[in-house]
Image (tube, rainbow, N blue to C red):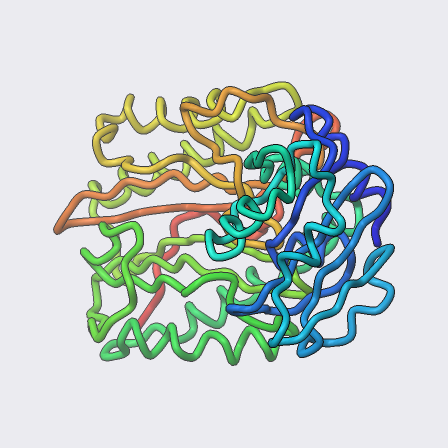
Length: 358
């Protein structure tokens, strides 16, 4: 059990007026205990209280001995609900996370496992949001791997290749570089397909003159990377260069203002103003970014409605884009970590416009 992380979650519960919580997200359980399994339809939960932490795990799962103060085991013929109710305080509210399904929540309510039930995901989310030094290094390593993979992606560009062919080959390159998996399904977009921010790679064939957008990320030693770059395959037109330069300036303006105390909303609005001033405001159709760590998208977005100040150790994306349907799509995305007096940009792949010769 990671005691420092546990205490951070307990402080978060205090702020919510809670004394106990049931954590069911497997990644959050790993974050707190170092134990991971994918439960699928079976029950897996970590009870956090002031006096003890109890892990509930099916005997089918890998051995969980030592993962918490106490491990309660059960098999497929046993109902875990009574086992949980033996541990929880019935006279106090129980916090639950967003991963606890109705299949288990409703029986816990019927069994009187607590005096009430409260959504308490924020206690864990806030703890995971601020990365310790070990986590920061793992985020650096994952992003460095992603930088290197971008060179491989560019090398695949040739007339006649399809988006899907490139996307399907990326996992092998990630593994060659030491990563274990994608952190999300890669986005490979040729030409006008890039005007769809979440385009799924298909059989579109690359032709000379197409712009190419790669939005990719790997998972290395549990932690995720995420980066987007956009390339030309012929001498760009003035309009293409204008769109690209506007996005680049928006990205760099937002990154330049990140420091503790600045709000997420201020960062978003800084990038958005650059794009609006250039006349492309209606074509920037999403928030500026998202937090990231054990998952590619973690709670706490970089948007105009998120008024909380950023804190040292938080990691999030800066990814402005312009998407003109049927014509052009450009996005430039980096990850950064907030430092004591600014930020550290984790991606080092150039923002300069680049023409790739086919």
